[in-house]
Length: 230
Length: 234
Image 1: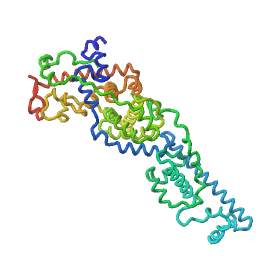
Image 2: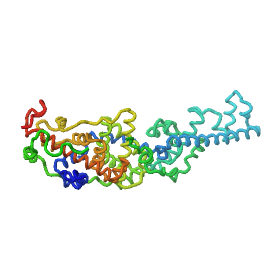
Image 3: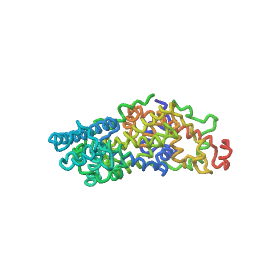
Image 4: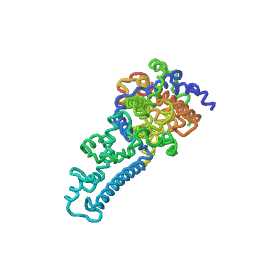
């Protein structure tokens, strides 16, 4: 340590250099100043990518780094359950209708002619959405996605600047092939049929942000991976 | 590692003999501007403010990139961009002030860099830059003194990053990212005192190296310095 103090860069000088370079050896202070010089354009060329990442993260708010996949699965499960529930209700409606003789029971008698269901759609509104393949798209997932799309579009219309706190978002992002494609994807789905409404359900807690933000600040960093490895 | 270069240069050339001309070319120390406080921007970015995030990026990225370059060399840009993807994702869960944010970002970047090294299955490749190698980063007809004076950012960063790892990291975090010893210690998983000591050792070493290189670089203006390397002292 005695050697440190006899060196031209004694601890005090060193600390001054590290702090702001104001007092210290000129030559050294200039090297440090050059190292801390304002950025070149090249150094900032990743800006747009970083901003895109930021945008995606905003869109997928609840999917934090660590819980992303778990949440996505969970969100999918919820939406699927809701869709299944809707189907069950619809089926019940059909069953009741069938039981009352209004229409043939589809569960027991898989009647070949789709015409029969078509004719039945009049009396029972609940059956309209179920067994009959819609002219444009596939049945169950589409209804789910249409619902998500509608909820999403409604949110964007109402509060464009805020993230959409819907747990079903992950499924929507996946279906659209990326957060930035959601708008197009939803637009491409066309005007959603009125029957798609029930699947809007998972988006219900629209007012409070889903799930508390992860309790660990910056969960990725200081803690778990903090071992520098040497 | 204590400086073996303390005292007179090995060739017996007395420091005073060559100091005067160079000293003329060296401007007095200029204080560096303090790093901007980002507390407001961080708070805004956490609620989704994109402009605030841009401001943060512009302020933090240069230091992050230069810091990471010391660990992964030429892959620094890729690693920094990975780090930003993570920062963008997790900033919502960050709590702290401006200094804390810089330290947090540096921690993420460092982890991405170390991950990168692990992926590459190779050890950090210490850059061996010295003033000798800096001809291409300064204007052609510079003397050794001017080479220091006009040292580009890349050259300066390379010089610092050529120090032993712990010293380089400590100096980069403190000087280029503007962290205090405490925060730098958090990034490096060390106590503040250890970081301070490493940074001081690095500065002494750098100082000795600068003097040695400058002393052996000869008097001003060997015109063909670039072609044939350096003219011999005296």
